[in-house]
Length: 463
Ligand SMILES: Cc1cc2nc3c(=O)[nH]c(=O)nc-3n(C[C@H](O)[C@H](O)[C@H](O)COP(=O)(O)OP(=O)(O)OC[C@H]3O[C@@H](n4cnc5c(N)ncnc54)[C@H](O)[C@@H]3O)c2cc1C
Image (cartoon, rainbow, N blue to C red; front, side, top):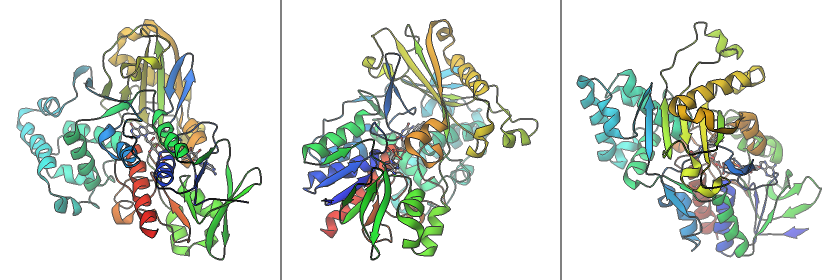
């Protein structure tokens, strides 16, 4: 049986990042993934000559945040080539504008403009101590302190949806203000050359450079627990590996309940983990064009929501809206090598989905038409330039990364944030977490990378 210093289950951002940090610090690391490709949710795949991301990604503070910090800590600061997002637009109804605070403010009636100006101003002046008082306050409540105007709420809600994929009624105001402030100050939202997969690949490059081992297509079947301590893993092929540190980047609920087994945890902890709620899931419409139709790199599309006349239609999964709001990323405008040649364009539109319980009943063809319509309302000239179009559903995300195909991980809601969030250290001796499900702070991948840094510091201090 092979012995390591640390075994990591999953090559998602959190797993790959903590693997790089530990290997660079001289630990003997083994990392495996059930998938044939690395990166979990932050991965890319080939389709008809294009490189497509599994999700629809933009990285909030790019190199300046935790994603870049992992590489600075491992002395490989240039292992990812970031392209800063400079051309961002916003579409509200039929109107297209620059995606800026000024333009959002100007869209409001005059008597409301000062309120939104005050809110944006507050984000810059609020102190860390004041933020600390807002961890368990919902974003919507905080915004109501400034404005009740529906369009002002729609703007903030679209940022909340983009960052956390949870509703403003439950999203943490402190986490929102912290992330928003970081994005505004850093002005470094970016996308990596080579697509999303370039990030986990860079981390695993570091891991291997310092002697770590990567094994793909290798699902962990069980975490071996002996005398109340996690001591190793059993892979699906029956092989067993041992280490004093086992780190799960996999689904936290499945890790506790199935991989390790709830019986090894205090009852209250196992129950709390089982009850965690995920961020929303999403569907994505991706289209390859034979010619460029836009210079946009990012477009936030805000479509006035028309609720169904009969609310039970949502529950039954039969309601398909005419148009949806969403986030549009044009990866080939960051890196033309993601298309088969310089002229071609790839546009991706992602939007949140109703509860996963309705998936089985959903009519994906109708949803594809809605997403297509929504995207073409931004770029009507794309219609006769389509080479191919496809839709990726939450089931695809689930196949890659589990967790019911949700977008982020454990939702950053008022009941699951800050001190209410699972810790990177589990109560089972020897078992730790590094992912967007435990510890950390930030937006999606940055949350996962910061969880990895947090865990690395704990392990380094333990020696
Ligand atoms: C549609 C979409 C859009 C997104 N947009 C953005 C965005 O714009 N900006 C942003 O920053 N983030 C975005 N995210 C979120 C971001 O991708 C995730 O929050 C982040 O990548 C999660 O990383 P993680 O470390 O939790 O690992 P995960 O992605 O959860 O990966 C876990 C890994 O563990 C592996 N695994 C699971 N079980 C086992 C097992 N038993 N054995 C071995 N391996 C196992 C899985 O195969 C997977 O590779 C988006 C995600 C999606 C899906």
